[in-house]
Length: 408
Image 1 (spheres, helix red, strand yellow):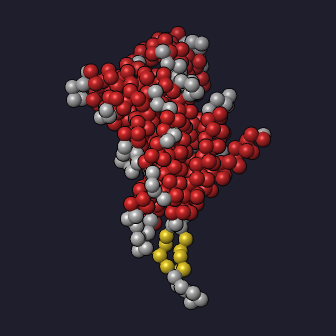
Image 2 (spheres, helix red, strand yellow):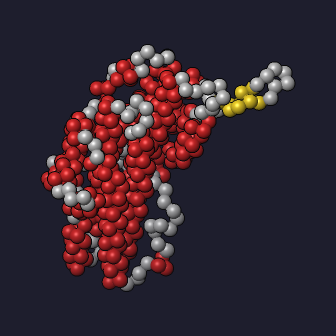
Image 3 (cartoon, one colour):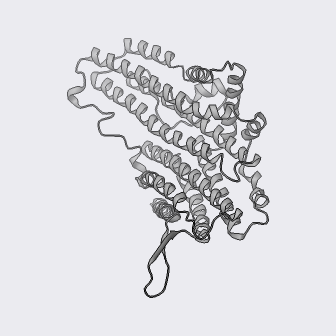
């Protein structure tokens, strides 16, 4: 109970700081009869807020990571979507802080220039993420009403018809998850294929402590406020990276990135200009959807599962595909944020590109491993094939079918 209270208190502090980070106030232009002047956000105030946010973010992220290991599925699910949302928010914030720090360092601003136009868009995008963060952990992922569970009138009452619908649902959901992985993961893979080979090699074994002195060297000679802004931006960026590592699973992130690097090398060797087609082939080889469909067909021949169990299994499989889409929509937003951050001041440097490579490798790994978990849940099978011990947080389609049809 105390842990939950501490978590809620930290979450409230974090979302409050997110809302306030870029909040601006009107500035008075005169004395007693003053009128309200232009809207402006002081860099000194922004720097102070950013420092506090970085600290609260660290506390909240570590707390949420622990919930990924919860015995309750809904809590694991809720923690996962919150970790993604926190990472998205912090990539966006870090990029904006780097831009403001660079502008301040170059002294390009003037008394007639406001930063409202720069920060207003960020403020709006953060609100959607805050809504996810404030959703109770045990609420899991919120899907539109009726998107998974069918009304009783729409459920077949005949066992053979229920078998057919279950088989159709398995095929449809396998296709949906595989296609979504190819689409979202393909964005990350395309970015990685364009990166320097040496940067990718370094990105596999990257640890954030290696960049401890980087910001000091980049902002040497800058004002105290610029150092504070850039330092907070780096901390927040690296914390977003830590949350992606948390999603991959404790102590396995380097092996995960190493496997992704091997897949990248494989695609490069087979490259013929159709990187998208090659990645689709890779995803299908990893997920083996055709094999799963054949297995389910065989199990349906001998199963003694009743109509109710088959109908429930169909709903569960559909829900897996819908929730995977919800997660990968967040991943896609994270990848877009990384793409924008890649061009930001201080990040558009050799050291900065190393961070981008490490984050992108990790996000791609998470996307593929998450997809595999949703189609199969064969953690042992995956380890035997690739030597990577991926997270196992859901009962995938294959496992759902095995349990419903009495195979296990």
